[in-house]
Length: 192
Image 1 (cartoon, one colour):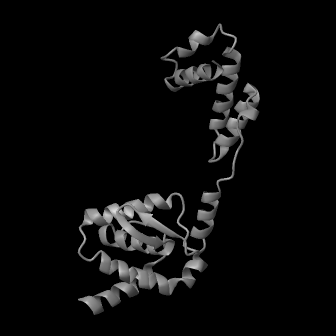
Image 2 (cartoon, one colour):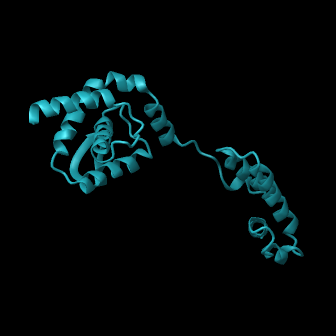
Image 3 (cartoon, helix red, strand yellow):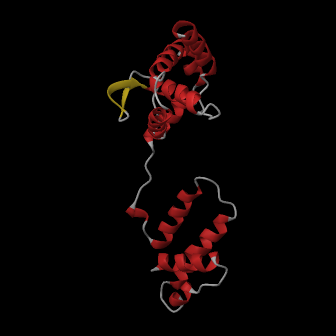
């Protein structure tokens, strides 16, 4: 009831008093608690930063006496992914492999339609939201290319080359320009 009341106060606030959903809660036992929750949110909104939602949940749980109903868990996958992605030195050591994979992908995508390439790079992009580990020999599979396995670096190269072919202005966040340019030159010299 208190959370419903806080929500009603939020809607009334959102519509600048045109609605009166909170009116139904005014005489309830939960109105004061709902008002307290809404006021905490309203105050926090003025200085809200990413991650503040955790403190807000904790504060609500304290007021509602729900602290034992949940616990925060560290997102191991996200932490591993971000440590790999922000390691340009590691990518630099793999530049010869990056060149080789970019050349392979250029050949693979040679006669593919834009939609087919887009389907592949989109799947890799979605997979990348959970993190693609390019620091180990771990392999991944794609629904768009069944019965094959790829290392994380192969997938990143596939995504980079794919976007270079279909959407060159797209910023993939990968610094493969040098390896890709060398691979493109080798591809043109060898296959055209």
